[in-house]
Image 1 (tube, rainbow, N blue to C red):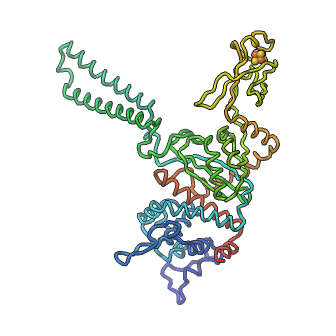
Image 2 (cartoon, rainbow, N blue to C red; image 1 turned 135 degrees about the vertical axis):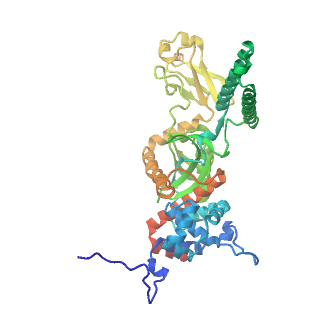
Image 3 (cartoon, rainbow, N blue to C red; image 1 turned 90 degrees about the vertical axis):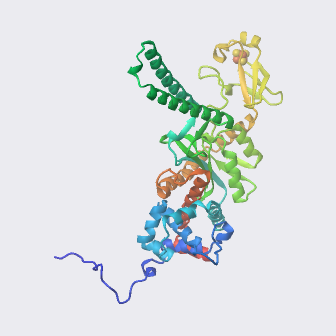
Length: 476
Ligand code: SF4
């Protein structure tokens, strides 16, 4: 029996097959093509939307945008990989009309169109909103760290510089000691004086550099600086400490679409609740919004900000927040606050009056009378010093309100998990391949994330509606 045989490479055809015949009617590239055809790229802020009458004609930004959308939908982010796809991939040939831009042209288009990519991502969210795919009833906020284009070896901190300075100082001292010992023993010929002087000059110059860097850090008020990626910060990630950016997303509960995202240089999430929730509310053009986030976002000032902005937040308290005493002593929850008199009542019924206000951390300190504590039978369970102190944050009431709200709706935390975990899994493994950025700087990282988030939303809408329905929606 023979094998199934294909055509010979040189086989001609009387009626050559066109590229269009190779692309099915409901293929993804047709969606990309129809979508980009209806965009006003000049209004969105893309460059080279108006051509000059002289010089070599540039590539149409619409073609390069199609290439990037196709690439990110297929985990192809590198400009060299995209260049290769233009030359061998039938789908890309159909999409770009067989154009094959080189990797520099492709990379430059992404690098110079930050504004356009961000505006496009936002415009697609509005399209989804108009199509009824975003409800705006409940939004889950979450963050993830994406590694920047820099190694931790490029990281400068005061502690690292102090260590380097000490090491250089020791080496210089070692050389000087050797020279002194040689002087004493009158054994000048045993050491190479010239080589010693050169080594000392080099070490002293390195030490000057280290000391200049320390002075610069101090002048700039920075605690860290990454030499090749000044915008990025040293952060704790799932893989350990990395030079990274913190990407925040607000995901709508109806279909898991990302309503808003931001790339920040904050190492933690606890100052992100209000800015992300407010931005999501603004995108949705609503007076009120309900948001849910994990305990990493717990921050009383942010809670109060949300209350003031008409945002109903569900965030579990961080266990380390405003607690007093350890597990052996009465927890602060055992003390009742009397808002009318601005004082606490202890388990023994004594009053803790306001003693001090700390402006820097916005904490108010209340203290029991030393005489009350001295005579109290509960003292061993309450305090190990002469009197008990209890602190209360300026916005403690917002935290208490949050606890009451969470107690009434414990299912909100379960909902949070089901809403936010899927988008990050798709963004990292389905679109980007790994949590690592290819572009430098806050702007470059913002461009990449805008592309990734846009493609995530596009992919999600295709899955929800299907290609024919989406094409009909785009063309109507
Ligand atoms: S030790 Fe002081 S604060 Fe604590 S229960 Fe007794 S009286 Fe109250």
